[in-house]
Amino acid sequence: MQDNNLEPLYIKVKEMDNTAIIVNDGGLKEGTVFKCGLELKNKVPQGHKVALEDIEKDGEIIRYGEVIGYAKNRIEKGSWIRDAVMNLPIPPELSTLKEYGTAKPNGPLEEEYTFLGYRNADGSVGIKNILGITTSVQCVVGVLDYAVQKIKEELLSKYPNVEDVIAINHNYGCGVAINAGDANIPIRTIQNLAKHPSFGGEIMVVGLGCEKLQPSRLNNREDNDNIVMLQDQNGFTNMIQSIMSMAEERLEKLNQREREEFPLSELVVGMQCGGSDAFSGVTANPAVGYATDLLVKAGATVLFSEVTEVRDAVHLLTQRAESREVTDTLVREMDWYDKYLNKGDVDRSANPSPGNKKGGLSNVVEKSLGSVIKSGTSPITDVLSPGERVRKKGLNFAATPASDFVCGTLQLAAGMHLQVFTTGRGTPYNLSMAPVLKVSTRNELKKQWSDLIDINAGTIATGKATIEDVGWEIFHDIIATASGTKTTCADKCGIQNDLALFNPAPVT
Picture 1: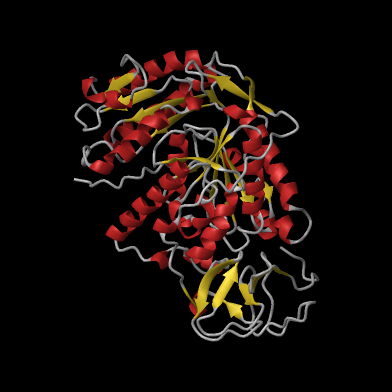
Picture 2: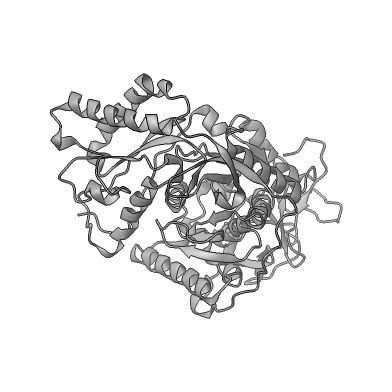
C-alpha cells in the first residue's frame, strides 16, 4: 500500500477506540515510533491492530467504537493485538432488540440518473440479454452442458443481440426430502433464478422425468412448451437436437430485444464482501456504503446479506429498520440462523477464515462490524428470507449464509442485476448471470491483480482519495456496467463460478 519511504501510519476509526490498524506495506518493526509518540513493542504486520493504550486483564478491546474482545492478560500500549490475546464477546441478545426508525430517509439526488436496459413483458427490466436454461435435477447437467457448448459454437453467432447462453445447474431435485419444512428454500431459489430479468422471460427447463422436483414447478409460463424431458427422447443425439431446436426459437425472440433508457429505480444491486481483511471496514466497505446511499437516494434497490457476518453487529441494524415489522423480521432471521448453526454445534471462532486473520481480522465480531458498513446509513425497508424475491425498493437485507457462492446465488434469486464485491485478500469469484464489480481494500492487491480488480479503495488508507471519491466512482461504474458500456475485469477474463444452493433440509 505504501512505498518504503512512507512515514509510519495507523488508522483509528472512532475516538473511543483503543486500537488502530497498521497501514504500511509489510507492517512495521519493533521500536517504530509514530508522530504521536506511540512506540511499537512488537513487529506488527500490515492491517493488524496495535494497542493505543494499556489494556488491563479482562479489559475491553475497542474498534469501530464497539467492543471486539476482552484481554486475556494485560496488554501494553504499543503491543500487537491479535486473536490469541483476546476472548470473544457474546453476540447481542436478540430479545432486547426492539428499537427502530432511527435512520431517516435521505432526500433524492439533485441529478436524475438513468441506465440502459432491456424491457420485459412482465414489466421487469434486465441489464443483460441471455438465454437461460435451468435444470430440474442434477442428473441432466452433463447433457445440458454439452448442449450449451454446441449452442454457443453453432447458433449464438447468428443472433448478435444475445450476449450468452448459460446453464442454471444445481445439485438439487432428487434424493432430497422435498416436502420437508426447509425444502422451500432451495425450491423457491431455483424458481426465482429462472425468473431473473436478464433472461427476458424466455427461460428453458431441462428435466429428466422421474425426479421429485418436477420441471413444471420451475416453469414461469402457463404452458410447458419450454420444457425438454430427457426420458422422452430417443437417445443422446435426439436429446441434444431437441434442446438446440428449442433454444434457437428463443434466441430468435431474444435477438429482437434492444436497450432503452430506464430510471435507476428499476435497478437491483447486490453488495457482498469476500476474502476480507482489516482494511475492508475502513476503505472498500465504507465506500460501498456511500454508493449504497447514493443508489437508494436515486430510487434503486440495494441488497446486503451474510447473516453470520451481520449477527454480531445486528444491534446497529435493527434500529435502522423503517418499521417495527422490519426489526422483528430481521431478528427472526437471525434467530432462525442461530438455531440452524446450533444444530451442527458450530464454533463461532470458525469465522473468520485463516486468510481473514492473516489480513488482520481477529474474530467474527470485528469482521461483522466492518461488513455491515457496506449497508450505508439508509433505512432498511425490507428483509428477505433465503431465496425470496425483492418486494420493496430501497435498502433490503437478504438473509443468506456468508459463503460467497451461496450468497451470490441467493442474491440472484432475489432479482439482483449486478453485484459489487469488496476484497482485501483477493478472490477470482464471478457470476455468469450478473456482472461482479471488484473493489480492492489495499493498493497492493490492485497492483498484484491489476486485471481482476475494477476499483481500488486502497487510496483511502493512504489519503490519496476520500470515501466519497471512491463511493462516487463505484456509483458511476455501476451505471456504466448496467448499461453495457463497461465490462468488468472478471467478465473480460471469462471467469464464471458455479451457483451454490442453500439447502438446510435433509438429503435422503
